[in-house]
Figure (cartoon, rainbow, N blue to C red):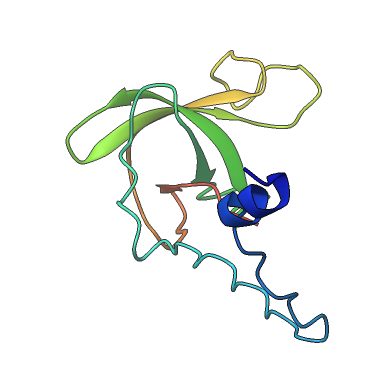
Length: 119
C-alpha cells in the first residue's frame, strides 16, 4: 500500500474556508418575564414585604415588614422603622410595630402590604 494513497482515501474532506467578510447577527436576548405572566406570589411565614404606613408624619411611606402569620385573606406583620433605638408608638418595642390582619394590595395603599418593588 502506498502511504500517500491510503491517507488520501481515509482523510475527510476539508470544507472550504468561510467567507471572513460575512457577519453573523447576534442572537436576541431571551424574553424577560413580566409580573403579568409570572405565577402570583403567595404569602408565607418569614417573607419580606412592604407595608404602607396609613397615618402620621410618614403616611404613605413604605416600610419593610416580615410576615409572622398567614390568614386566608390577610397576614400579620412585624413592621420595621428606621430609628434611634427608643421605644416606638407605645407598643414598647424598639422601632418595630405589630400590624394584624393586613390585607394585600397590588397597588400600594395605606394600611396594606405589597411585594417589594423590583428595580
